[in-house]
Amino acid sequence: MIKRITQAVEYIRTKTNDVPETALILGTGLNSIADMIKNPILIPYKSIPNFPASTAPSHVGKMIVGDISGKKVIILQGRVHFYEGYSMQEVTFPIRVLNQLGVKNIIITNAAGSLNENLVPGNIALITDHINFMGANPLIGENYDDFGERFPSMHEPYNQKIRKLAMDIAFENNFIIKEGIYVAVAGPSLETTAECKMLITFGADLVGMSTVPEVIAAIHGGMNVLGISIVTNLSNVFHSEPHSQEEIRKNAAQAKSNLKTLIQELIKRM
Image 1 (cartoon, one colour):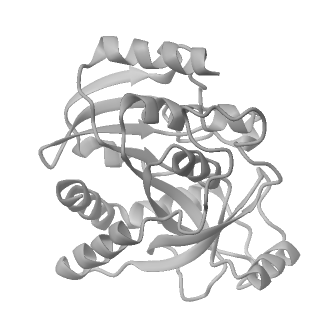
Image 2 (spheres, helix red, strand yellow):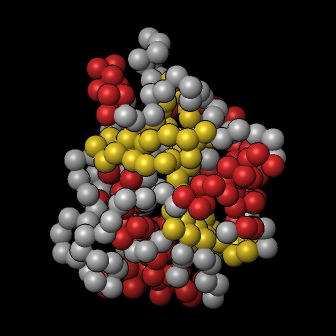
């Protein structure tokens, strides 16, 4: 594993000498957020040694290094998922690479279904905590002490200070962001009504098929994490209409303007 990560890191360093402190992972329907980056260096995932390639719809599969708000950042335009058939170690391989490149802060975005009728399509919601209901954990197996300790604390995986900053930015710019607990399921089938009812009893507000493995690996590596969900649909606890990927991408687009403002200001002030 260490050799594979080192090979990826060495290749990326042949493309750029920049060492950004902040990285951003873009979820479903959020590719255009990358348009705000200036002086971009594009590195396709398929060109990076050992880097997993995304097969999910709307996940472009590019690493972009450039400037936002006068600071160097790395954007991962798309991710890989457990449901694509990748192992948890492969799903979190990009996080390990970012960590070894020197990234300290990571903003992880996703598209999520709402289990809370107060979180409606188009809302931006900060993740306050999560429930791992995927049936696996990226830290299972041999622990590499260079990455982090064997039993990392998950007491507060989503950085409270950065969440507070995000709330302040939203207030200053006259838009609302909400908060919620995110539960990750394996997918790729969407949840049944009975499953949604069960997840609500767990205390979850949002449900999706990503993010949690990435957060666990990031915390293991000592990174500061901000999780952002874009609410793309209400769960079928609240209605009886079938969901579609077109609906999910359309609702994700509603949040883009405010999300861009939020990200620009966060990067400037973190």
